[in-house]
Image 1 (cartoon, rainbow, N blue to C red):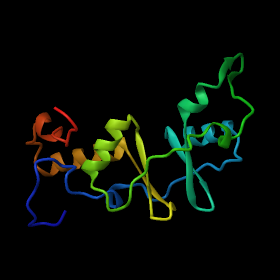
Image 2: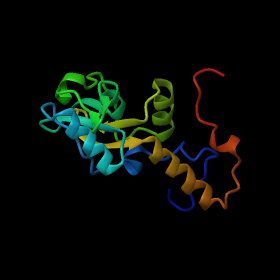
Image 3: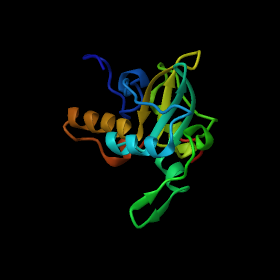
Length: 162
């Protein structure tokens, strides 16, 4: 936000997704084994990976998608012998870089998802915005305001129905 601009009550009302998204996103490929995708998620401390082909978003895979198909054995987790493309979600909800964070947050809550890939008009993956990114925006905004906002002020996101 620029100095001198009028501050909105809700910290997620003005920023855009392209300002808060993670730009360097590690991705899975359809031919990757799910065990490798899970190991990558653990290494980078995330719960979901975009799946890309030729730079375009074609799916998402989560740790839950993998764990629901895995078992626990004597040596630890036993992963199924399947590829990412076999279990990834193909219908991916994404947003554009110009999307307002309030709309991103509303979509994530309504669809019960923790991340939203950011794509261009041709579905090229530009970044990803997560629930943690949104929490950081709120944390930074309340810190800038001296912590004066109440929980009610911060949670006053647009709602579909009251």
